Image (cartoon, rainbow, N blue to C red; front, top):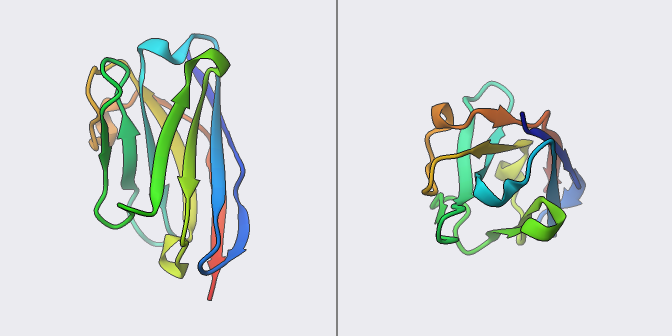
Length: 124
């Protein structure tokens, strides 16, 4: 079992930055592909970005490309999401997720472990 806990969310003005963290316990994340998803009120869960365990390759949604960066620190069993130039449309609950699939996939059904989410609110 893998337990994931997100942190780092909050309220920020448009153009600002936040860094989300996802700390894992129970198992090492070294052999897990990690993803970030988000869900805004009244909308479906949306893929943001993912990083594979096998070769470190990444896959990022066009809506955040160039602004958001995923990284992982296997020694700390933690994954990060650096969010820059935030926009009001980035407001959502952000979730991290883990899958033992070897590639960075945007498909949420593949991820077997999820955190509880952290709220990010961007004011205009």
